Length: 428
Length: 79
Image (cartoon, rainbow over all chains, first blue to last red; front, top):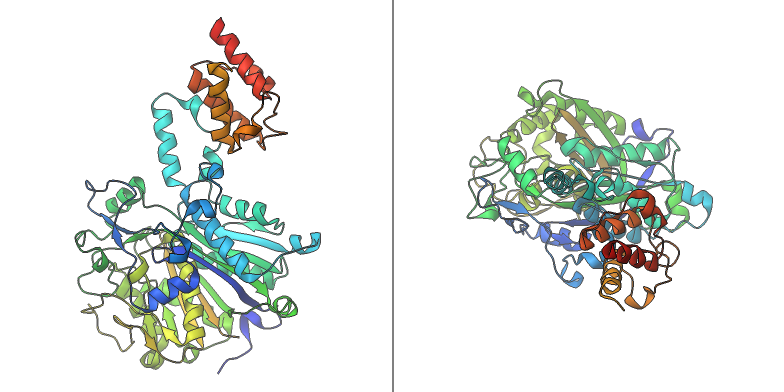
């Protein structure tokens, strides 16, 4: 039963009225979602640069091509002359934000409406390739030739900046940087800005584009990426499977338009779902590894439940962080511990099996998947889960999507530095 | 039109993404061709690179139109 206590008690309610995705499964929310539940994978050999001398050679890259095929033609979204003023992660953010804002139909007319509309789009890393290129220019003794667009091209909060400039949104302009938890933090924090009255509408999410030499080599050095499936890329991301050997880098962006409920109702907006819970925690343990038992994840989920005024019995689906690393089983353990007997009724999947890990954008696309899981009563599958390394009573939706009643979903994201965030959404 | 003028025009078209017909000698980068202050900095750097000339900041500030750029570069090249 849904209780009305917690995060929404006496506060303004926050609903989702627009969504946008560009990522390894392509462009457009409905296109990406239908490919996801059909069990398709967006992982392939790296094409953006020659990765043949690196241990990891697969990634989830955004497919290029015509819009009607669900692919990206960047010039249709970002004018060619502006493209070189922004790193690729900003391109990604602008594409998904444009989709989301157009989908929402929100066009503030008055000065007041514009000032009540804000943006909070984060990134885990920002303009890594831009920094790489600029470093070479300086190293070659050409520091005076550095583009005046270098800094604004690399800065993480410039996605929020560009989106605000494009649409004239003059409300809170903010950005989150919490590694792989960025997307959930951005949506959760933006929802709270609306709840606390700082804004009526917030464009929120994450953007990332680090399928580049520094990004791949850096995560390779940290022993975080899959290296054993270079010949069979679509098998590389295999959360909970005993043969998993690291995550697969993905790129892209997920953006939602969050809106105060009465505001959305008054303008007759289409409402996808409601953000009802948000919880955060810190591991205080290690820079890259979660602690035994993943108590940080446990506390983030518990705190999200408390803020929603719900119990574990109310949650039907968990979109796991599940990156295809050793930490998968720790998250599983934390979910089992928190859910107790309710775990038996739970479906939990990792959509990173199909998209790879979009780092700072992961939590945002996964929040969108959670909302669509509720809309369609479908749990998206965990691909490549052939032999779980750890048995569980939780149904991890191996291989194929499942039609099942889903009213409330919880989405987890955890980041380097020991940062954890959980978001709870429901239908309206 | 001189070779320098042609090349200047080409650089302006490329960097500001404007139609060639708009790049007249009198056209102002900011007022007519939609450039902002960062665009003009980049434009001057592109001229320096393309013509192998040094354009000091105080001179760069005075280059506001297509003609200003052509004149300055022609003078440097003639010197």
